[in-house]
Image 1 (cartoon, one colour):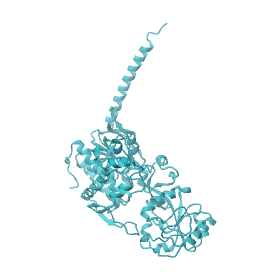
Image 2 (cartoon, helix red, strand yellow; image 1 turned 180 degrees about the vertical axis):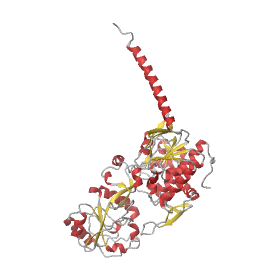
Image 3 (cartoon, one colour; image 1 turned 60 degrees about the vertical axis):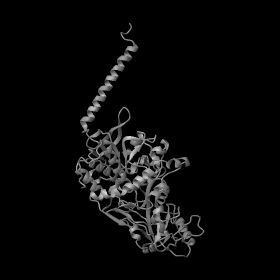
Amino acid sequence: MQPWFSVSTLAVVAGNCIQRRMRRDKAAVTASIRSEVEMAWDVVVIGCGVAGLSAAVTAAEGGAKVALLERAPYDERGGNSRYTEAWMRMKTEDEVADDLIDLFLERGHGAIGPEFLKEVSNDYENWPQNVRAYPFNDPEIVGSLAENAPGTMAWLKEHGVKFTFHSPMLLQKGPERMGPSGGGLAIVEALATSAEKLGVEIMYQTTGRSLLLDDAGNIRGVRCWSKEKGNFAIETPNVVIASGGYQGNLEMMTRYVGHNAHLTRPVSPGGVFNKGEGIEMMLAVGAAPAGQYDMFHGEPVDPRSPKHEALIAVVNYGILVNVHGKRFMDEGSNRYELIYDDVSWTIMRQKLGIAHLLFDSRMFDIPNIRTRIKTDQEPIRASSIAEMASKIGVPERVLIETVRNYNAATVEGDYDTTRLDDLHTQGLALPKSNWARPIDESDLYAYPIMCANTFTCGGVKITKDAQVVNRDGEPIPGLYASGETVGLYYNLYVGATSVLRGLVFGRQAGRKICETLGAKGKTTPSIAA
């Protein structure tokens, strides 16, 4: 007997059933989403550090209704910002340092063709799409950072932040830096308090997982997870991603940084919360990548210390040996602030990611040297090379050879830590170029050192207003980035600019959102007044 239906009829019926089911499922999901969260948000900000808070407060001051998602619990809010000293490359509250623009432009690119440089001399509106999307620090972005920094400092003062000036841990003469009294935590607490007063809803222990798109691919919200609700979604036309880098994500660190990435750790507890979803979700919707993905801002720290940022910032004034008891780099190649990234990366590449800095007690006679040692652990002491080798776990014979060959290569001269003194070794295959004086074998000290990861450098390209740029060089409507999710660093970190980057572009994002919402004037009273 033939069936009463044909195969083609079955296909039509099945197709209709599937379409009805899909419509019902879509309606159910939409209803579930809408019942789960109040949908009247003008903007959702991901991240409660200085970058996210700057965006949230600025948008709220402009009349926008703002939700802020923070992965950490209340007591740990703020990510890396909570723990940083937050020095900024500012001469005064009204002026950035003289070298800020030049350093960002000089260091701010990888391989770049001469034809691109020619195009950059034209007005930004006339740049070809590939130039606008190319991973380099274009003058528009750097100029926006410098131009808007003074106004951002004035805005922070309105919110109760006070500033201090300090010559950083540089024994050589260097520029002063400006920072908040109380460090980054002072900014986090001041802006979080302002955000709460302005009606920003801060959702703690809540993570942004991915972006919601409409059928045309436009931003319409965020898929989230929270400890309280599990999976849910928030609909909004504007999203600011300020959720930090990927230093807390071993898979991404290994993918981008490579060999021995597992032998570094975030420099502060706040960095552990930075797992890279913000960057991944932007790349997933076509954002143009920017910044050097295989680079991070490294610092040499004491692995024994539970303190955040337990710096051993004196690597210039001794010799570094690996677990084999051998030197592996020129410890005196330049001033500390110009080599500590490279020192940290090189230590990470050594076996077990560990080195020891050997020196004698004369190092402690250097003026202000103890300000550069932030560990709470005492140095290891020994009265012979053999004893030190036993204590630090390296081959005795090799360490004796290393120290004695180094001492034999030192020469008489003026030892001067305030400058590059050219007191260098002679005859060593691996020289020490400055501050090379012999180490007293009977008066040995050592600090163990590992590489700590302050923040990662891969991110996305933005405009001067913090709009995320797609791979065709155009802004993605409704998508903004600030802080570590913005790729601005290549080759070598421009010191004392990361907090500044987050604050300035967070404010730029908040301003641009208010402009697009038509909320150019404040429709709610500013608590900063």
